[in-house]
Image 1 (cartoon, rainbow, N blue to C red):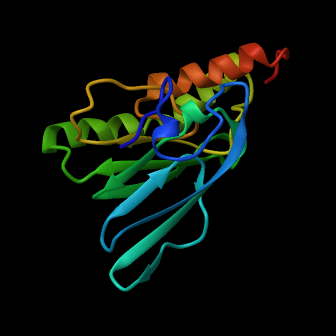
Image 2 (cartoon, helix red, strand yellow):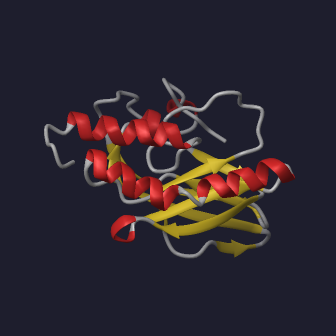
Length: 172
C-alpha cells in the first residue's frame, strides 16, 4: 500500500508535488496474475491478463493533489455498494484480515451508504465520483487522507468536510 502525505507521491511517479497543483489521474498497475490492484477513483474496464500478469486501470476524474493519491496491491477482494444518487462505493479488503476483524470490517463497511446519506444531510452533496476504503492487513500503523479510496472512514469524512468547507458554497 502506498500512502503519500506529505511528500510520498514523488517516490513512485513523476509529479509536481505541490498541493495547489491538482490533476486527474489514470492508474495502470500491472501485477502478478491473481493479485488485485486498487487506487483512487473508479475501475476503468475489466482487468486484462496476459502471460501471467494482470493490468488494472483506475481513473480518478476529480482533480486531486498528489499527496492524496494511493494505490494498493495484494490479495484484495473488491466489494461494491451504492450510496446516495447512485454514488459508487468500492472497497478493497485484504484476504489476510483475520476472522473477527474481517467480520467487524464488513459490518462497518456495510454502513457506508447510510453514513453517506447522513453526511450529505449535514454537509451537502458528496463532491467526488466514488467513495470507499482500502482495508489492508499491513504493518503501516497510521492512516492518511486520500481522495475517494480512504484507508479509514474518518479520513474520508475529513476530505469531504474540507472540500465542502473550502468550496465557498453551502451546498458543496
